[in-house]
Length: 361
Image (cartoon, rainbow, N blue to C red):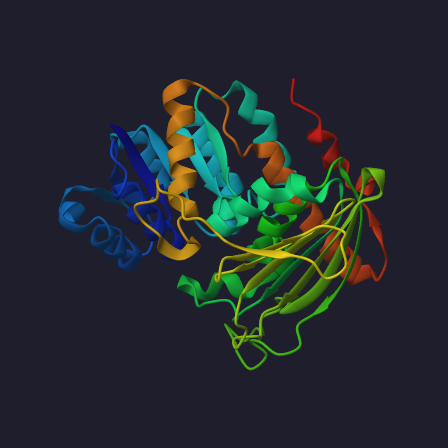
């Protein structure tokens, strides 16, 4: 039995709890959150076992006192650096929610400490495990060498969070770090070579402009285009809009290669695959993952993510999603924000921390 502690039991922390409680051989034994209402939600998410879990206002007390083998870090983004310092000191296994950290400096510190950590360190970039996306990745060889990757997310605005922390760039790292690191991770997964250059245009045009928190107006972007150039000439594009509630599908992913084209939409789960023949294609339905026992917010992706995390713990193997993956996904988001702010292309070589993309010693 792998015993989990949850650091941050807000919406995503409780989603992790529900997934863990649905897995044989895993359970939540503790939760830490400074907000009493969030601790109440943690207990409710454990169902009949809720009264059994130990709760703490401070994650450091939980790490020191609770009976746990692993933790999930789902606290606000800007706390991840400090929380990970304490987790590294404790030696427990850790699933660190996305984004890994809000700054490249904090990401670099996590990367530097990971090789000497006795536990598994996995980053929570679970979009790659959503059944439609996972099947898209399996079908990719049919298109040959991918030259262009397009990702569209048209969705609703950011949801309210405790203390409204997600309304400000200083807490989230910015929309293109907070929300879009998932998509930059998919770009890095699909396209060969390293990302080289980022061009971005974006703004806050519609959402949250009439909101005030302690007299401040939120400053998070609600729309953007981001283009990323890769080694070897491949390129990717993200089209993000967060005031598009009426969209039939939140996400569309399209890969075009030397032998054809493949696209998928989520949540419908329809894939369309075609070769180079004029107007000839076939439609496929995404196959559900038979392992999934809890669908939750991400179509079962978080459940699969925990299965892989538990496999790494039990087998002593590296995690599928590493801290280098986490760093690379944040780096593109940071570069995109810089491109928007300074109205210019940004070479990723400008960001010194990217030297850490080489395998750690």
